[in-house]
Length: 186
Image (cartoon, rainbow, N blue to C red):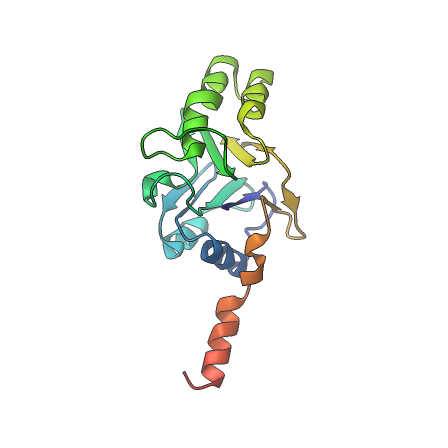
C-alpha cells in the first residue's frame, strides 16, 4: 500500500530518514507537488534533490508508490493532474483501471475531475464524487496552495499528515545498517 505525506504550509519537510523509509517500503516510484515545484519519477535521489526547492511556507503532497494496478513506470507515479488540480491516492479503489493506468488515475480522470471542472474545486459535488469512490482509501488534492485531504490521515509530531505509518519500521534502517556494517568491517 502506498503512502502519502502531506506537509502543510508553515511546516518543515519530513526528515531524510522518513523520506528514505517511505521510499524503501514503497519502491515503485515517487513524486510530489507544491505550488512552486513538481516531480515524479523512479529515483529517491532525484526526489530528495527536488524536494529541497520546496519552501516551508508552502504546502506539499509527497507520494511513494507500491504498485497494485498499472505497470511500474513514471507515468503511473503520483501525483496525477488535470487542469490546475493535482491528486494523490493511498489504497485500492473498487474501479476497473483503463489501459495501463492505475485505479487512482482512472478514478481521478473519469469521476472526480469532471465534477471539479463542472462545479469547482472544494464544491459539494467534488465531495460527492470523492465519496462515490474513496471507500477506505485516502486522497490528497492540491490546487494552487489550496490543500484538501479525504480519509483518515495521521498527524505526527512533525506537523505532517501521513496516510499510514506502515513504513515507519524502516526509519533509520540505512543509518543503522551502515553503522552495523562498518563495525563488522564490511
